[in-house]
Image (cartoon, rainbow, N blue to C red; front, top):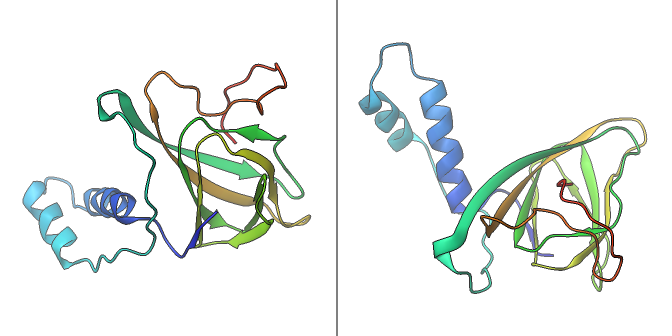
Length: 158
């Protein structure tokens, strides 16, 4: 996993546009949103090369994952690249073959396609934690699958 401080530039643009749109006064047109976006300071804070993907079949999905105190997900895999961004608290994460890391609010990380996510858990036993998972997948692919060789079915994203 590669550690970063914030979302990559595509997510920054999407989030910036959403904030500008939400902050508009009723009745203001697109030009007001453009002016607010132009005034924002945007800089790339996370970057990671993606594997070769067929752009004709891709979709991007943003999923919020919440863990209660001490909460965790069972081992799982994602068929596509994932960027995680911690919103609140701290998340412990480990992909098979890599060391376990803890990411705190404002930090991001990358997961390569088909890596077995052995640890995905709240680092705290007393406070909740939340993260956003940004998936770039084939439109028809499930976001989450059991680790290869288990034979279990599943597609809910942790």
